[in-house]
Length: 294
Image 1 (spheres, rainbow, N blue to C red):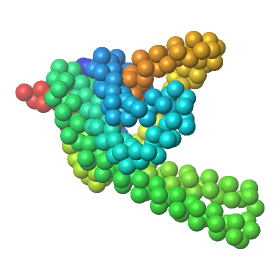
Image 2: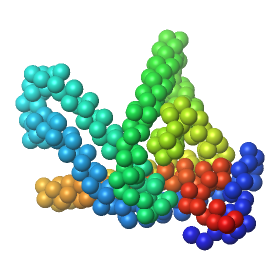
Image 3: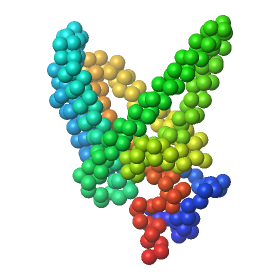
Image 4: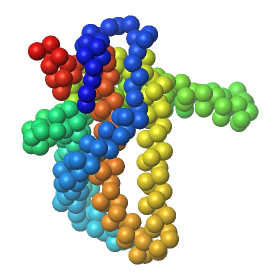
């Protein structure tokens, strides 16, 4: 991508004053995410197959009973092997998390440098799964805290005899406020993997990088939701129109398209974080900034 020398020099000089900030370019980010996802579709598809193989390999007997519609057999199998089931589920979860970390790093690194080796990028990403697991625990604790606060507020409102309409509006306002509190940390997962930082550092980096760009990031998030909803709607309509045959066609199509959609969603957030890193830190991993001064 051709960039003027003046632009590169301005990017390479990070500043804490972003009053005259450059636009994030949401449309370009979404387009670039589709591009890098399509270019690496084969690798992403293999990673997705590996994740499915992990779950079916470790939990095959439980899954097959559920897929065949025999809920009683599935329930009995879990009850008879309760400890084994959850042990295998935990192992499958950890392995799948490592593969998803590999997928995130692959999309990021192949966007920065399309020639980066597949195995090197995937291994670099997979090694981040413990840090990402720590980040998930932090988010889980935050969710529990927010849930308890919401439940307490609900009890207080009902205890004082507040009208149901007032309670609904108050809880909606509280939910929006909670979203406002957690939104600055939207990019923390991709930052944790792509920048090789720990959970706490990733949260801080996400807050720093998103400052001044939260409205564009909110628009980006809403747009990704709309596109993802449209994809699910098409799958559902296909299954309903063609009956059983449509259901099979929808399942096959989902298995083929789902890796692309996952990669695209990963790409949107990874590229957004990288773009903010260039704008705010002056770090361009493609080397184009450094080449100006060679």
